[in-house]
Amino acid sequence: MSRDEQLKERWELVVEKLSAQFADGDKLDLDAIIYLIGVQELGQLDRKFKKDHKLDLMHIAICRLLEPYGYYEFDYFDEDKWPHYKVKEHLPTLKAGEQSVLMKEAIVSYFIECKYIE
Image (tube, rainbow, N blue to C red; front, side, top):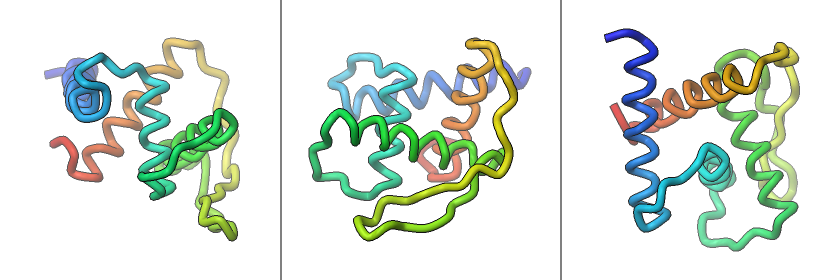
């Protein structure tokens, strides 16, 4: 199986499992999954978030997802226990499709690392 086919299969598995668990089977999109990862990384699962915090949660997720690629590095937790990252290397300019593939690859890797999927 090619790497692209394997990524596609694993991505569909992540979407299927998360959609069943968090969206009553409605298919979650990439942004929704990034948001869920942000909530997971923050660790405040029982809290409701305002719109500006939702963007912050997505930022946390993106930093965490791209950390293994060398783009970000965890820096510290603030007094509210929100994680902060510093930029190690700026992302290269990517086309929209390339960005999507990078994020899907990073998300799949994240959920393999968490043992959510194999």
